[in-house]
Image (tube, rainbow, N blue to C red; front, side, top):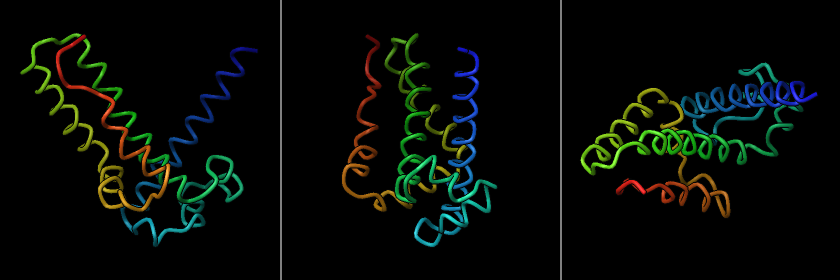
Length: 140
């Protein structure tokens, strides 16, 4: 039964990743405010009802894109910084991590920079303070 649960979770995660990437691409092309959930449904091949299974609203979808993106870049950074204690090497890792991530995820980065103020309230607060959780200082 365990394999079934992990397999289902994996399929859920894969579908969510597809939705987030496609949504980021569409938001980057058309802008968040000019994109409808129907546009995203058509681009992903996921029904409107299916989209609402993954997120309650277009704003929550934007939040998930931003939060997921920050999460990935920060997780990768923390993994790369773990084995390095030299401050200059850590700084180089920090810069390389961000530049390579941004280059590989241009649509998401465009959405992060152009739609930073499109979220409101708690969602905006969560995303805007997320990058303060990682320190590029000396290894612990």
